[in-house]
Length: 366
Image (cartoon, rainbow, N blue to C red; front, side, top):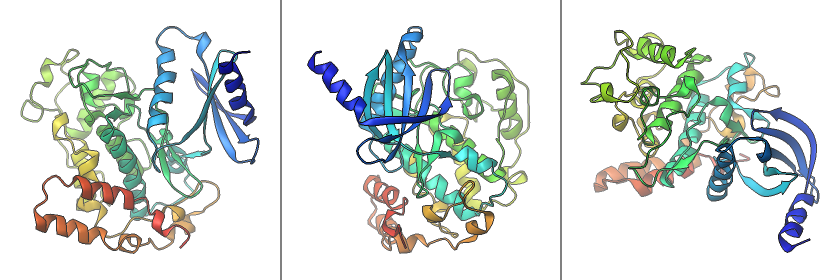
């Protein structure tokens, strides 16, 4: 037995599989525990030897990006080991996702709850984009929820870096209901805007408690988008008719978002619309979203520990008074005003500070 194999077995002995909790096309997920401490963990077993060329790259990417991305709103990779032609990813244990919460009709969402989930989503995504990584599969069941209420981006199997803007990428990414129109039209060069469209769909779903743009095929997905948001013109989206898979889909009028999202505030609608610009370069960035007035207007975001929880927390618990953002960090809004007064144009340092504060860690336990 060589040194590499011995090291691998040492890693393997640290973790104990208890029961299978999920299975997909490429992987099986087990609940387990750390042998020494009993701490709950998840083990994602990827059966590398059974698949065609190309699928192994998903596993490699997931390990690569999760190893690089250490952040409170991104799932933590604890260890990696191989066994019997399987690659095993040891992850922190999170047994609830945002889709489960959305579908649980016993739970009532307050506007402050939605604001908190959106803040944490943008915060995790901003960190990915700042580190030149596209997620490319954001949807409610890839947003996992920790026991303390923290939301964490998960499933980086389709992620990739975008350091080279001239490099072709596949358009066959992002689950259809959350896929932006440029990918449906076959775009091979794209940016962080594809993830922002997905976040807009998640934002809408949180408000509606049902998927916003559920198409049955790629063509039907385009029709569903255009029925909801209007058929784009050359003025709305210059050059879209030149995309590789462009086909005319029909003419649909632009309907005000207010007609459907009747309870949303003006700030919420503005942020939602900023995610849904047809021209990708006009969509808001995750960086700028964290400074959007939506996050600084009342009601303040709910403290993560007080967010609705599936099965263990009824709708009455969701009525807990939201902890004011100023109590979490009294300087955030002051810093924002000072930035404008000082004329700091880029806002990079400020937005990262705001991003850090929006996880409310300073108030945990209060």
